[in-house]
Length: 562
Ligand code: GDP
Image (tube, rainbow, N blue to C red; front, side, top):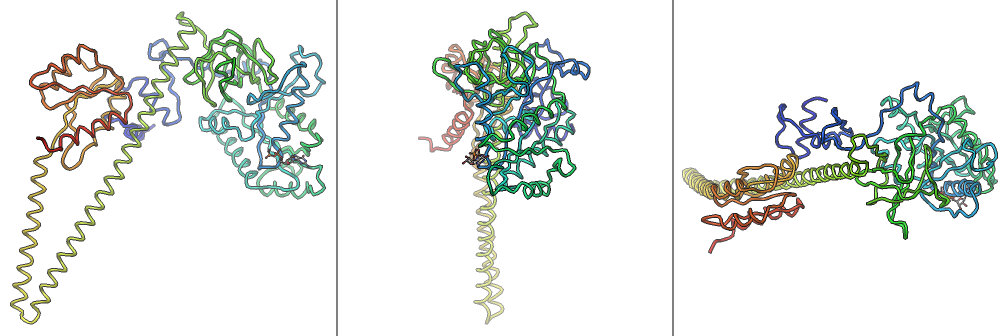
């Protein structure tokens, strides 16, 4: 990327130092990259800053060819009332019926349906399956889309044959179009998403299949019937008609796309949804894209991690392990992960233990996340300030123009009064002009006086990371007005120390503020004993509170002293 672009991003995030020779920490770089929807990968994975869990490198073409086929992941989309829920319910009932008796369906975000050869004994692992995401317009779908993660292999666009192409139908067509062009341009390791049309409600007498197909064609969907490559299956979610064909079509498409993925090794997947369940604690559904998860594994997802206590499927049946294409409910999370979080199995290569590695990774990610939020806050606050400054300027300009107009009016009036006597006119105008000049000078003088009396709130700023220091400086540097301003005497990383107190003492009328750091008792003692006046030390971990503290201190400087 261009240096200018990078500097622009950094400034936007609150960095005040954007010199080309500035050395960024890994964490700072990561925050900046996240802003650009990129992920930082450390070159030196053994460095302590890179203490995190990363996905395995993508498979090479030859490795992929050897990996087993995995079930396709299918999302059902379409216009409201066109029958998505009905279709999902019917498909799900197949899934539950195919399982062992006793299973009670549970919405976990997805379910798998066996297809083709009649479900024989469930122990035969070769039965082809299809995994359906079970909430139309799944929240996780948009969350993941915005992170560039591909969640689905096939989108089934449900169109009611008695209603035709509607606004949301067109939206789905657009979304799929966009996903397809994204995956083409990103040379992604995964294949592109495919579209299948399900013409629903064909049991209804009003259904007009041919008309809807023509509508779809004019909406840009190249159906097979018209020489294109998009399959169209006529179904009825209500009667079940055509569902076999739909499943076969999905399976055929996935076989053609050769969706392959390793069924062993550290798990990689995505969180579909998470919740606290009575008796089970924190649970989350993981949609597995690669590898395997087993009871006892350590896995991380975003800023959460789990030592897997138990796994269960959509029929509430306990599982020992789960692999590609499976959606499993995972128990044992220390905190609730978020929908859309990337799930990674932790393999202990460094010898510190998988659990410790997970804990450290999560700590680090939490810090990065906090920094990112902080930067966002600062950007918001700065934007607010910019707007306010613009408004102030506009108001000042208007007031000035108004004075100017009043002045001109007075001068004209004076000129008018002297209309009969030209010498008088000149005198009156001259007098008016002199008066105005005097007024203006008086105003200027007052301004100069005010400026000379401008108060300074002197500050020593400390924070937990260099990125945070920059952010805090960015956030507080603009506080103040025409009469008072903030002056940063020094800034640095770490808790307030003796040097900071000494500095504040030396400068005089100077306060030490800290963000996400805590002064020791010893330092606080030292501060209160400072001579001639105690040094104030104020620390906070909420940027807004710290900023309002600084504002209050500024205001206090202006308050009349008794
Ligand atoms: P969604 O909003 O897309 O999830 O649509 P629903 O599944 O809730 O269906 C909307 C309405 O259409 C409901 O009253 C369904 O009973 C009805 N419906 C769904 N599929 C069919 C179908 O294949 N045939 C008929 N006749 N009605 C259907």
